[in-house]
Length: 288
Ligand code: HH2
Image 1 (cartoon, rainbow, N blue to C red):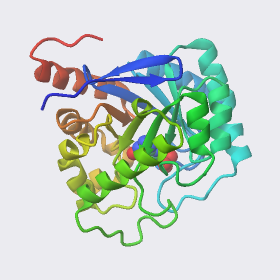
Image 2: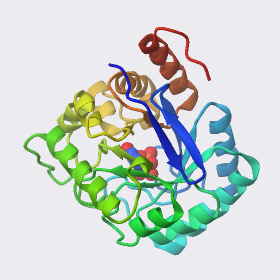
Image 3: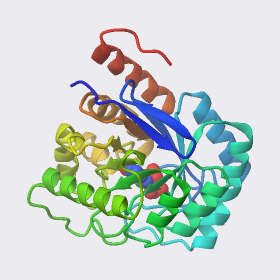
Image 4: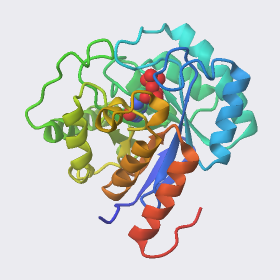
């Protein structure tokens, strides 16, 4: 399918979307994330990793200080700030790469933006913290609004839908309207079906099949499927690190079916996949 193109304003920067598939590299500065938990708890290791992901081709580095894996323990705002802000300041001092803060808390988002972040990635789509929409409006940050059913503590307790694609689309359209009413410019917002957030394996597969329908909501699409458990379930791969090939397969599928941005752990390999898919879709070589 032909990609719809967008200019995504993120504070004072604009990221072109749709001409080639953009890659968001994951950096969790947490002790307990499902795949890279504990690897980058030390700030200097985290900064090195961010610079490495940028050098590997990531367009955006997504920094999270609270795991959202099923059943994860909530983290206080001061602790999230302690984990993320110093790392963001140091990355910004050394690199121009776009930085997103993966948080559900307005206070954390504001401190991260003051430290140099450009984008708020809120897996609760502004539901968890009433102040988040104001922070987004006032700072003119880029925004990612993601669908989640319930909270990380409850989301995998028998999630149910009638038509999962239609329900997720209607939810995201509702959240776009909500944020717009609170002053967030429409062109600043990207939507995400929230793979693995209150979904069974079948729901995740249906959402990936339904990406073209989700793309019709008129905002750019982000997909975060990297190393997630449905890939392990389909392939019989228990360890997240064994899910590279499966993740790349999903990346290719998503890039071909409407995703503008892929949120991934494995940046080099995903960039290669995207270049191939983009080249095939464009009919001419894509450039970096
Ligand atoms: N997935 C995770 C976290 N943040 N943000 C968006 N927009 N989309 C996603 O699919 C998404 C996300 C969960 O993955 P990860 O950060 O690797 O693990 P953890 O939540 O355990 O830190």
